[in-house]
Image 1 (tube, protein in one colour):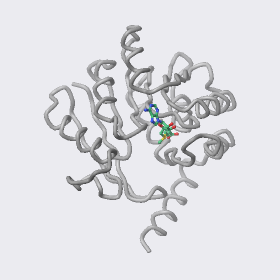
Image 2 (tube, rainbow, N blue to C red):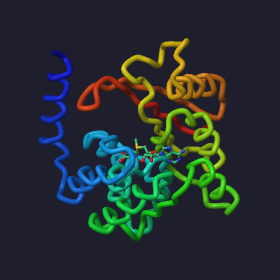
Image 3 (cartoon, rainbow, N blue to C red):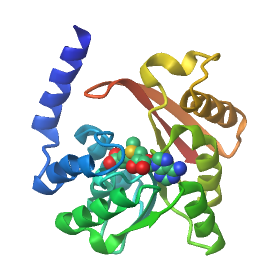
Length: 221
Ligand code: SAM
């Protein structure tokens, strides 16, 4: 059974390369207190995001979808004290749990959670003339991905890195007749990026603890 092999290999890679400390392990457990438990990124994906932050030298990160703060902690820990992560979530329970986890992980000073529909929060950031972000991680409700991308572009500068998670969904992304709003959101996102000269993009499929999925990586031109 392929799924078992993928899981075993992910366990092995995580154990060897990116073991979780107690704060991260507790963050993962604590997603049980949110409306949507268990949908945080894997440790190796968290470490990948952290490496992207370091490689790009990002000082300002915007995240769509906080959950218990797992991916936020990986990215915040990859930044210096003057870095900032602004993370958006609609679930007040998630925001509360995440704030507790940020304190335990030692990153509370540089992570700011905004509660509400992410599109509204992003619009507020635009209105407040927030400085552009260096890296954006889009990982909330997939149906809104096209809107999140547009908002991200408004909040970006040339060179901003944009990562969009879960763009393969067990292969469902190629089903053009899908009535699943998440799949339609991903497909509309792909159509937009195809013709958007503001972006250079690729996407990679992944297998592992989360089954068969993938992520999109883009750079603002
Ligand atoms: N990035 C997190 C991590 O890896 O630890 C996981 C985020 S989880 C996949 C998706 C989150 O998006 C959930 O916490 C959910 O409450 C939030 N969400 C769903 N719809 C939303 C919306 N319209 N606006 C903001 N957040 C939303």
